[in-house]
Length: 78
Image (cartoon, rainbow, N blue to C red):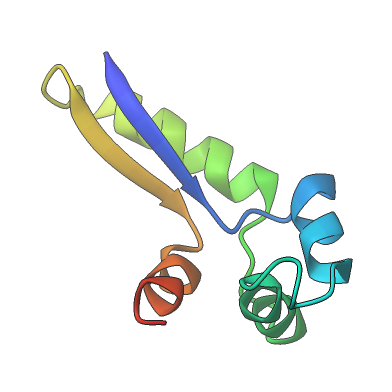
């Protein structure tokens, strides 16, 4: 079993966050910047990363971060 942690994937939910005012969704500016810089991960990229993690046969219980992890790291620094 793997724990998959998706980050900043270009999905309808993330697009809704991008459109939200920053006072309601503080991280919306991070997503807006990522979208403007084309650094959001596509669903296809995330699916590829997930399958690669499965093929690697990582240890049971491993946590696998997929998607635009740089956007998540920027959010952690706020």
